[in-house]
Structures are given as structure tokens and as C-alpha cells.
Length: 419
Image 1 (cartoon, rainbow, N blue to C red):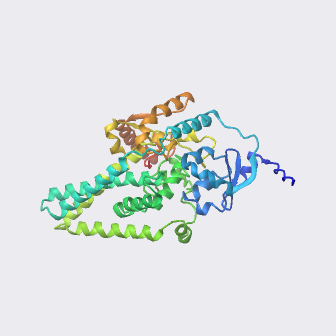
Image 2: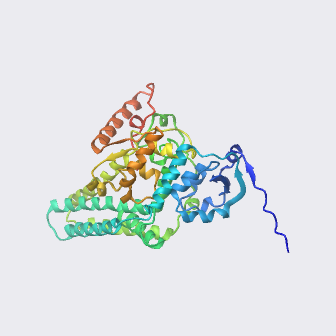
Image 3: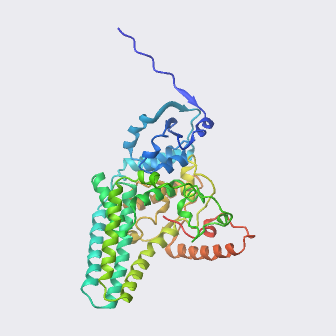
């Protein structure tokens, strides 16, 4: 009887050796102590190459768990180097986070999406029809302005759909999910959904890093910290952006461009149907002013949270996400208005969790934060806005006098961010 070949003896590398593989073309990561070479995969990664490059050279188990469905594990063997991480350990916080993640999975909460998507798509359709009807079949200036406001409110709701579909599959299959992404982002709101996902994934990975989180970087219009006054380099925007490099990473680029073309066809055409230029201007102002409410909501969730300078670190995933976010307290009947992002701590810890389940897990996350002495901040919508106004005022004063120290708190340091 033929003898079977003995299994090769596993080889181990140190954390310091792993950290040497942390750049484009040489990117290794550890998941559950196994080492994977994702250098060539980075350009094909659905979430973009930046999340991989920002966390390269580290154990990324918690981040991988947060952003990937269980089916992603079957692809890891294609990148396994044969190496294992020597002295691989898991912190108590990470252990409890993974335990909670498994508990939520067993409860089916990642698959239970409710009926909100169908209802929301129906609501968007009704609002669009009423807005168009008000423009085409009414002679009232007030009705035209109200129609513009309704259009802006529709954009808010389409934004929530785009956000949800970018984090998890809200439709029956990937093709329909992609269709809804293009419809809600490109066609309805005029925003490239692929650009948004590229930007938003980097925000989630590097939450509240002044030089790695793109949602804190708005020069020359806004600054989020006095550190920008000394020309702090953006590790997100501060590299050369060749058109070909970016364009090749955009799947279905023709569909993206077609969606944007459709928006810039129907919206100007609708505005042109108004009787005079004054009403056209009022319509545009009303629509963009109302949708601005959503951007206010985006800014509230990070303003009183901690910030840091430097690349994101994966070994303290739970800690960084919890300390860099803030919840907005509201009644359950207002969940539709906030799009689920009032539970920002929960969303950042479990970004694939459907928004209808964020309220359910809030007590569990709060208890876990309390157990490990981590911040779990939850304030009213009014209080969050007060903090925002204080932020704007203090940021302006800090900009006038660079000799004054700035507290390491985003309530003082930030002036704009994204949820």
C-alpha cells in the first residue's frame, strides 16, 4: 500500500516580519493567525485597494469579519502563504466582539432585512411623482417650491438606500442590488455610487484618522483640526491619482456614466419646465437645502468622538470604532428619518447589519462597551446639533490663533465629517 506524503510542517513568522509586508506590491495580512498575500488581489478587491493597503502588515481578523459575509472565507486559501503568525493572541475585547458577532449571526440578524427596502422604494417613487406633478401641473409658485423641497427629501431617502446597498445586499441577488445602487445613487441623486463606496470604505477602515479618513479632509473649504494648518499630508488624497488607475477599478464604468448622464438629463429638464428663472432658482435651492439635512445628520455622529493621527490599526478594531463614533437618541418611529445612522456605534462595528436590526443590538453593544470601559456616547438630536455649533465656533477661533492648543477631541477639532 502506497504511503501518503506527510503534511508539510507549518512555518511561523513574527509580527515584526509581518509588518514588513505593508506596501503596494507587497501586502500581507493575518486572519485568525494565518498569513495571506493579497498583493495582487488589491487591485481587484471589491472594496478598493486602500482598505487592504491601510491594514497591510497586521492581523485584520476583526475588520475582515465586520466587512465580509461568511462566504468570503472560502476564497482565502487562494492567498495563503503557508505561514502562520507566531504567538498569535486575541485580546479580551476582540474575543467578546467575535463572540457577539457569532451570536448575531446565529440569530439570523445579518440576513433579516425586513420589508423596509420595498416600502422605501415605493415611498421614493411616490415622492418623485408628486414632485414632478407639482412642477408640470401647477401654476403656484408655492407649490413649485414645495415640489423642490419634496425632491430634496426624496434624495435623502435614496441616499439611505444607496448607503444600505453599498454595505450589504438588500435585493435578491447581486445584479438587482447593483441596479438599485445605480438607480438610487447615479440616476436619482447624481452621485457615482462607486466613488462613494471607494470613499466610504476608507472612512470605515480609518474612522477619525485625521490623515487617513477622507471624511475629515475638506481643504481648502473646511478643516477638521489645527494640524491641517501645518499642511498635514492626506494619505488618502495625497497620492497621484492617474485616471487609468482609478477608472480600471470601477466595475461597470459605462453603467456608472450612463446613470450620471440620466440624472443630468432629467433634473435640468424638469427645472426648465418651470415658468421663469426665479422659480427655477427657488426650486433648485429648495431641493438642495432640504437634502442638506442629510449632510447635517452625517456630521453629528463623529463630532464628540476621539481623533488620532496616523494609519488605522487592526489590533484595536473595536476600540477605535467605539471611540470614534456617537449615537443620536431618537424614538423608534423616527428611525426612517435617520436611515439607521443614529446608531452609528453599532453601524461601525457591524456595517453589514441591516438597519432594521441596529436598534435591537444597541443594548448588547452598550453592555460590551461598559464591560471593557470603552465610551458609548448617545445624545439627543438637539444636543448633537449644539455640539456641532460649538465645534464650528471653536474651530473658527482656533484658526485665528494657532498659539492656542487644541484639545484632542473632535467636538473641538472637527467641522465636517460623513456618517
